[in-house]
Image 1 (cartoon, helix red, strand yellow):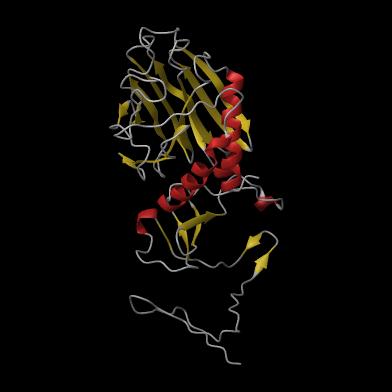
Image 2 (spheres, rainbow, N blue to C red):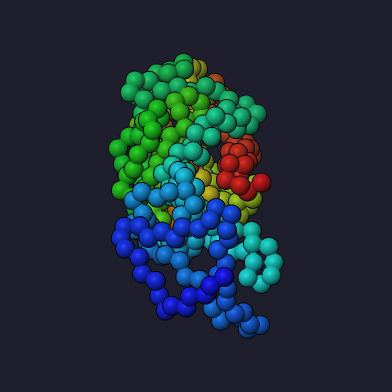
Length: 334
């Protein structure tokens, strides 16, 4: 065994490699003290934008945009060691990284949730919806449910995108990433804000969304206000019931929800920054925005059923609970 002592080793661009025997271990030894480490291992660091353009599986780095470690798993960057756990005090670190800023992770989440969405209904909330052509709207579908309505937009800071398509692979509006969950009931989409700023973002719907001549006074219901649901301890949800009780048109309800967690290091300054809707059931809209970071915001178009009236807060809670149970399963919360 030989020892070589040097102040630094500098490699040539673009790749500097240290080759080792496949059965060998690399030990980095330093001196530890009761009060703290006297030595450390510093690894490469940089912003999200400075990630390697062609990473390989196993690469690790410190991301200064999120102030945490991340590893490349072969398809995406995954964060670790981020959150509000107490591992530093000798306890268990319960932090789970928020990786939905990564487009492939968001796409994987959307695909999983699309396969589960028909199980989210509460009792009596299982009426089928399907989009027409083009796929960003419902028009006279399912017993004249809409008259040229259901146009859904992504919102940011009071402005709205163009109409999203439920059959598309998703897209971006400004720096908000959104993904749809398919064309049939329930019509759901999810969005994630930028990864470096506290951002006000959400969803809106507009158009002639109700039955001809009205059918009931639209009303709004606070479903959850900073609640803990399925392990997510920052949940806000808001429901708008539109026109209902017509001879041929079912109820119309718009459900909006912000999801965050202390295990993600989420920040929500106002779960209901903007909530607004029209009282005119023949020319109506609803708007929802919340201010958050390391969260996602989702929306669903739901109904209690054919001519059965509005959805109650408890029925909406069942829908949210079921959605978040599947989200927790995929995201590692249960």
